Image 1 (cartoon, rainbow, N blue to C red):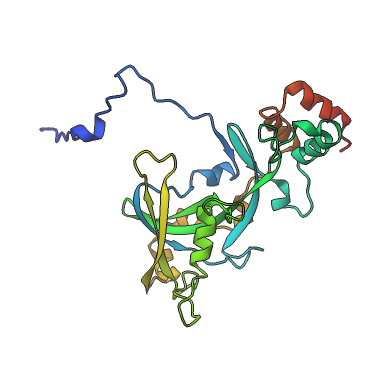
Image 2: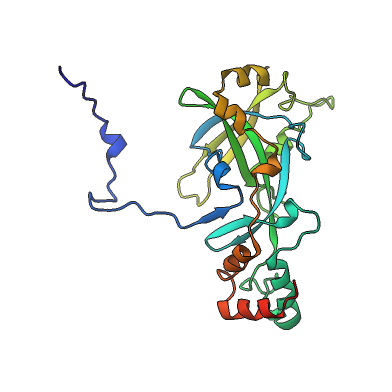
Length: 265
């Protein structure tokens, strides 16, 4: 019996910047916003067009189709603020901010001190999307910036997608409805990476033809359907100890120890 051997094209394996002994660099970035079982379902946009269906609001969820969350960023990682899941909850970073403001205000980030320690949250958005990947209909979680460009610059992709769902024509009517369970249309995100640009650019548009959620669910494997859950169930909340450890990536460990000894929890 003869083996059926297939060869990859030169373009698939040709990398002039490495040698056969070069090990791929592993990322040490700690993205802890989503629970581990959902982090693997992150929706990633390759260069080119990605068409997907926004999953409408799930009845069991306290949120609409999109959950707006507050995220704390540090060099090498990020995590979700506990107030996303528990009203008025405080992060250990809130205590660190209050302590620094009282005892070392000069250490904090401000417009006048951009080299200072930044302990404030950034807006992000989360929603479920259904799309085709390698011939399979799968459930993916979008996690992207919710920045509204109020301080200048470009709006985050999450905010742009939210805006797209609100677009109206010259008669004041919605251009399309990507959120209706049965009449909703697909959304396209086209990613480009201009030569020399540090960050990619995105353009968005809506499709024309209704794509019922019922027909998509019927094509999905049981594990894909079962993955769909209220958005708040996919967001991770770190323990207090985990938050303190993250803080050591921003503030010197001896200062963190001092803050911990002074804070009354």
